[in-house]
Image 1: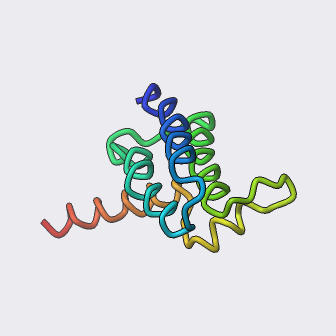
Image 2: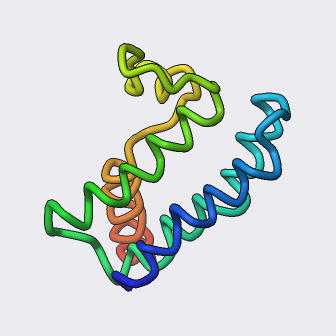
Length: 108
């Protein structure tokens, strides 16, 4: 699974090359369709727990936010960009998914 993490920046780079001049909406849709599912793939089984793994996953999402907003300034806040996009951190998404899975097991 760790090898899977290393491939994601390359995929994001491919999207940047091909969609760099497109609108925010198109860029966000491409990210959500092509990259984000791979970030979330298997997280209910493989929940990254080391700081290195979590940081690498979050870094991909933060780079995507910069790309979508086309703002690479070191003075810009990526956290604000994520909030404008209404994106939760991937770590929070994993926690919500775990709770949802536990609740669905209790219902059955």
